[in-house]
Each structure stands twice: as structure tokens, then as C-alpha cells.
Image (cartoon, rainbow, N blue to C red; front, top):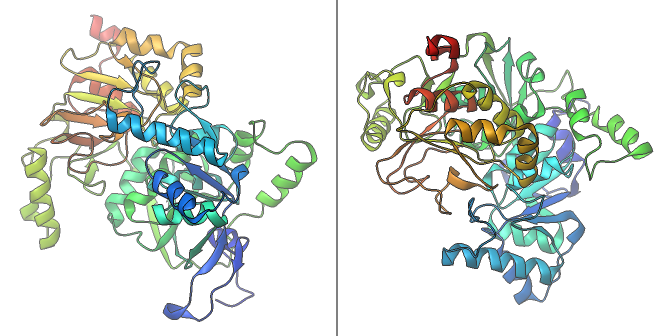
Length: 482
């Protein structure tokens, strides 16, 4: 790329953080050394990194740019009692001890700011446009919704950031995901990203930073944008980004760690430059017509195995690619589904509303609007887990907790919960779940559990009908009463 050619958003943020540029060209180029603005920490991937510092006799380079919270192993019931599972208890106690020893700010269970790390960062105003953000968690891509370059990193990289506040990385390729048009009623950001992954595949974004663009993306709220960037990793991408705009600025302004006064004005002026130049070139481009999107749902065991909810389970024998057909046969065997079954005929046992993908206020409000005045299928268990203690408090102030509990759902404390089987909230073998989380791998929600990824409103409608459903499938409360 010539020096005078325009830059993409990702390239601009990258270039602003290069401490030392790697030598060489093309495949032989050595990695760049990149400065990291914000390091988020939780209990799962940090113990080995802290131990590495300890063994090397090193201190944490920038405790002020490091923040920890408890989320993966935390129970979502009876949080005032000792954690029953010994492994989870050890993970939490180790994080607390490490944070105290190394001077890391920690939001533990019971703290008003505790919660899923990718919910806590934005709500505190720690996540800002133009930043580099890392965490030992793949869904760090969530923070890219702010125009930040946000990446999940491995344990050795966590230690490197702790020790140096830098990372050694090769530049990524860039891919534009153009989503234009207007979403229909009942279609959400979750449906956009599931449609994107279904189109490009779970490896389609490998080696790329995805930039989501177009009128449909610009119309989304910050919470919806976070949902989209959150699942970029499920397409194999290194990160996902959305250019900051007035929606971004209004979300960040006034939050605890946001700039203020003259610093705010200066920050916004800089943030406004964080857009892809008109003459910039992406390495790849993909287009999605938002006008044509319907509610999406997965039928298989990876996020790319998804279709519109109005369709039927696909037939592997009709797939042209043998590898794809083989994967589909295996997935359908695990999911206990027959080709040709209408997706809306599939009955579920559990509905999970939560995770770093869909556990924010907007998600809870959307689901509550669907179930208000309706009755839950008595054979379905519904678990509602706010993404943070702050979200829980705000939801309770609005009375959403009563909407859920009167409906028959369980209202829980904040945490990763049933997104993954690392805490008590798990499926039993053979149980089927409509989940607003981000992964439907075998055993992800508990050994033998079967997961269908859905949006919050599809989750809510499914809890009412007992089968995978969208709000358009519901009778109105008045009609139901008649």
C-alpha cells in the first residue's frame, strides 16, 4: 500500500499504536510491537500469567490500565455463600489473591460493578474509540463496537501485556462487511451476525479484522453493535470493528472513566477521524441485504450452521461439498434432528437469556416486551442472567425482574452463566436450549447439551410456545385470552 493511499479504520488504530515496526516485507515481515491501552482480566486465563510474573520477579507494568472482574466461574444464585464447586472457588480465590498482590483493581462478586468483563468495560466508560483492548477471552472483539481494536489473547500473551503493556503482532488483513437496508420488525443485530457467519463460514474471517459498515449498521444502538462485534470471532476473525459516530459518543459521554470538559472535546475531535478513508482498500468485501433478513437460528454445532427460522433442517445429502455434508451429518446426529424438520417444530427444554452477546439492558427490555402479558410453556425452564450487577440493578429499577419472574423465569445474579459449562448453570445430557449466547459447540452448555443460538426476542417467544419461535408466531394477549 502506498503512503498516500487512504487507510481503513483498523489500519489507523494499528498505526497509532506501533511502538516498533517489524522489519521485512510480505510473509517475511516480522511482527510489529503494539502498545495496549486497556487490559481486561478475569479468573480463567490470568492465574498462569500472574504466576509467570511472580517467577520472573516482575511487577505489573501498568496496573492503572488493568482491571479485573469475576465472571466465568461465578454462581448466579446465592452469591453471598461460599462457592460450592472447589475448582470454581479456587479460580476465584486465586484471582483475588493475585489482584491484591499485584495491585489490580478488582470487581468481585457482590460489587456493584461486577459482571461479565465485556459488559463491565463499556458500561464503566473504560472502552473508548481508537483504543487497543485485550483480554484472555476470545469475545474481546465485543469492544470493537466502539471503534477500538479489541482482541482475545492467549495466556502467554496475557503475561507479556502484564509485563510490558505491549504485544508482538503481525498486521491483519481487512474485510468490509457491508450491511445496507432496514431491518424488519423482530429482526435484530443477532440475526445480522448469524447471517454473516452463515454466509462466510466459521473460517471465512480468519486472519482478518472485520469492519461492519452500511446503513443498517449505522442505525444500530451501541448495545446492538456490541452484539455484532462480539461474534466476529465465530467467523474466525481476529477482531470486529464499527466506526465511532454520534451514537458512540452519546453512549460514552458521562460514564465514570470517560473524558470530561476540554479533554472530552479533544477526544471527540480525534474520534471523528477514526473512519475508513474513501480511497482505502479492503482485502475482501462481503455484502448483506438487511431488507431480506429474517430471524435466524442455528441447527448444528457451530455458529455457521444457521438458517432463517422459517426454514427447515437442511439435508446433508443435498450439500454439494462433501466436507460440509460430513460436518452436517455429525452435527444432526449430535443435535438429534432429522433433515426436513421445520425449525419452528423443534421443542426446547430450556431458554437462556444472557452472555456477553445478549445480556444488556436493551436485550432484557426486548425480551420483556415479548413476554409481558403472555404465559410461559410449563415444560420450559427460562433463566435470565443480566450481564452485570449494574444491569441487574437498572433492570430491577424498571421492574423488568418482576416481568420475568411473573412469567415464570428465573431471575439470576450477573455472570457468564449458561453460556459455558464452567459454573453450576448447565444443561443435562440431551437437554435442548434456545440460547442468546455465542457458541453452540458440543457440550458447550453442559455435557450432551444441545444448543440453538437465537436472539433475545426469539428466546422469549420460544419460552412462550415451547418450540423455536419468533414474536410474529405469537397470538396477541387479547386473542389468547379469547
